[in-house]
Image (tube, rainbow over all chains, first blue to last red; front, side):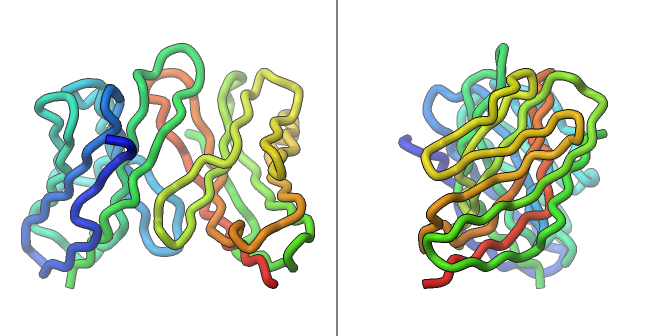
Length: 116
Length: 115
């Protein structure tokens, strides 16, 4: 597609429920990133995919968070047993493969998750 | 670990004025990249300008320019002839070009341009 698409735009769930957030990157972009932006803060890195594999998942806060990218395109961020502290905007970004030089990321509009 | 600090939570100027947003960072790396991103209410992060640390010349993009002081680890953004559409959150970010090339963001500055 022309840009990075994220669905749903907004998600309200109850504490303890399971949620999935989807990211559809720009066609041809092999690198995909997930960031979490809490209210009033800058985005924080969660996980990076190069192709189908998670090359860096050092930002995932705990084992309730998991992400997949089975075909190297669309990615899904999965959160189990949601807690109120998981409420945030989840941003996805994609780029061409990080090679020599800076990697310019294109961001989606994010999915706002609210856990009641 | 790298850190990025934006000391101005909010700023407000009149349309057509010039405004400067501050950013400092901490790193032991010698080669890196710095960015300014704009985030309007639509939530989408938009790249404003990028600076490569090994380049001494300050980056410029139309009305946007930076003052990069490598020794002081300072990276401020100047917006000239500000427009109503510049109203947004602005984030400074650091990137190590090795590995995952993940961005480290500051806390943001909320900029309001008044008519």
